[in-house]
Length: 223
Image 1 (cartoon, rainbow, N blue to C red):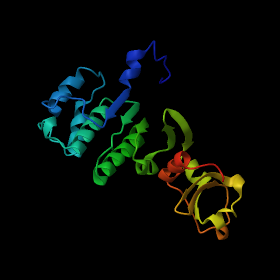
Image 2 (tube, rainbow, N blue to C red):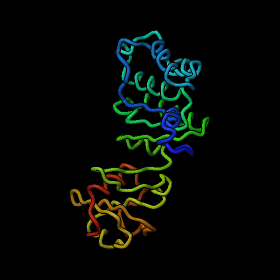
Image 3 (tube, rainbow, N blue to C red):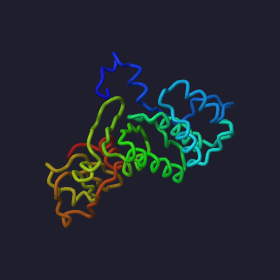
Image 4 (cartoon, helix red, strand yellow):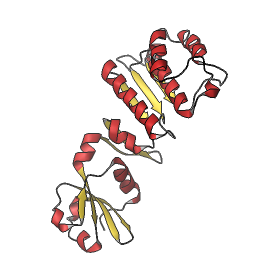
């Protein structure tokens, strides 16, 4: 990890990792000033000025107790903590879960800015697939403990098309191109690879990440 043996250099590796979850890990009676005092004793690279700058950017009052912060503010606080010791690798677990679209947008912009300025990497787990469409370079899809696919976002969008059609039009599709098909209320949703003659079906579009994941799990092979 980071060019080092992670067992032999355990502490050095862990100091280069930032971690945040969707729940605040600090006691409700603490405020950001208290957290700053705690973290500067843990991380040698802790940057107090950077932490306070993030708090200002996120509009978090440092004297305000965690118990008085909203869920969105707590998520931003955890993100500020994770980024303030200059980590090379951020691990974020459901950091945007349960947040409104405005707060989610703020967090995604913060992450994009952080990666562009520091050349760091982010491992971002989420069930909000629209966030992946916006921010992810690569996607690993896990289902019931199994890796379903691991692809770049660009490759997924270039590789697949989503066909919506009737049973009659479905028969016109080249079966070798069909990855998955889902039938609901007599209409066929078909995930296909390669070029498809649009005149053969009702509609052809670019699938979202959500579409691809849904068809992989609920869809069947070519009928």
